[in-house]
Length: 53
Image (cartoon, rainbow, N blue to C red; front, side, top):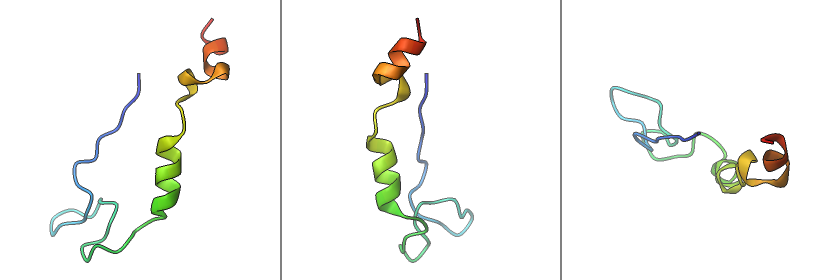
């Protein structure tokens, strides 16, 4: 089982853990994050299925 949760996408006064800064500029390479999230999970690939046997 795996998962993730975004509680906030942008920084706020009290916390600075968003994907975007307070002024809404990128903190990281958004395209790289998108590519990682669109890949199939290991369990969804042939390699993942072969390992679970």
